[in-house]
Image (cartoon, rainbow, N blue to C red; front, side, top):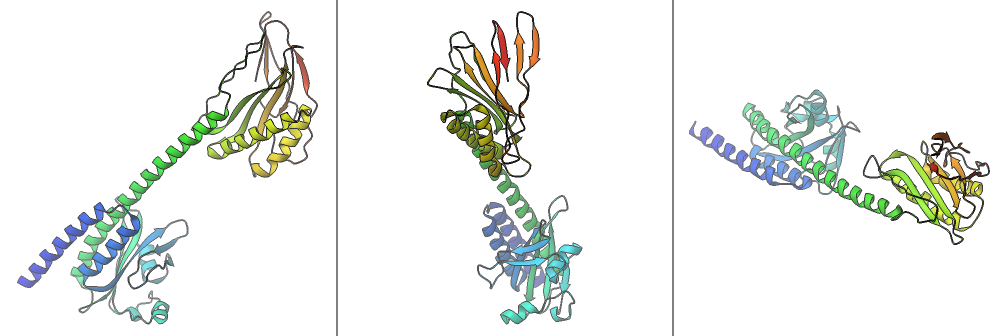
Length: 354
């Protein structure tokens, strides 16, 4: 009796030490290694394995299995003892593995190892989500008894909490890293927008944009030409996030290169469309308004690829109207033709917005 009490006190002390060590370990692989090695010692077993749940593939996997270095084991949920425990969500104590219908003998045959007794336990988070399976193999003295089940249950509860905390910490760190990357991406994207409004005698010109997310596909640009004309682009790539922002920067570079070639507006959109078809991917597109302001003739020639209609306001009469769209969005169908540009003359106190 005294020996039993002493053993239980020693086991309790070991469990507390393990709990402190688990909570202090932040690296997942090191945490798994710690759980496995300490479980083997406390349980008086030959070896242990810790499997994590891969919900997407409906599998268990492990990086750590004592006696196996740098190998990953994957087990479909429902197969083998560990897979059976994961599926039923109930512990399993097997005194003779070769008499257990769930035991897979192939692993023993491959390695030459002889599995005798197995104690396997599902690991749950506080909300009942199964995160893994803890398995101990071959009790060194006899078979796993009721006390061993209680002891492994205590270890398993601590391991589940430690694994869940580790997951939450990793998600937090990953989120912070993503936020930092998005901030950098936003700074880069904002740097691609004009840093000042053009100053042209007789015209007030301004541009502004505000993304719904850190990054997005909203875009505008002013391109000052050597002959005094001004190119004006307003575009939007479908959806939000980093992907549309990257496509926007690609479209900006293509458009500026085409404008430098001094080709007709319709040809610019046609070539830009062909450039973007391969980059956009299925389900994505870009709308674009592009016009060229000629301050000498007080006109703007423009064309539109599915973008929202430009709004024209004449202050004298408080009259509003919309400039027509002239083509379909970019990046959908290669070889799409675009109509010739529309010429719009400015009269006194006319406002043209896109």
